[in-house]
Image (cartoon, rainbow, N blue to C red; front, side, top):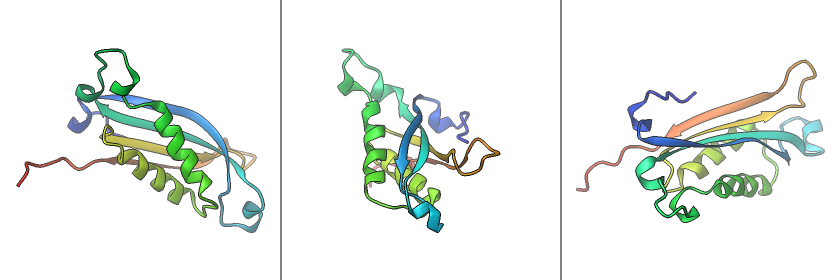
Length: 135
């Protein structure tokens, strides 16, 4: 979904979290509200190389992967979510709120909805607006 030729991403590295699975209380149907459903999360973060190229090989010099997992866990812990779109949008906003992140892609999947397909899901992508000169 992200256009990797977008010039705003040209000076970025891509960090990612793949196939993070959690039980999530999600869904609009009555049967979905009875028990958590298995969900899978995939997140890509685009971070500027200039701000995240370690000089001292120290975690404080980069965006920590723990941040991604923690924001997802925090959102899921807030309670039942009706729609995957809401969940994906909330996680995207949490990713973009990090000062070291320029852009993010968030994909959510429910792999157990239909027996004849691998998953149903939602994907969103966002880039922070460019900062203009100070007035």
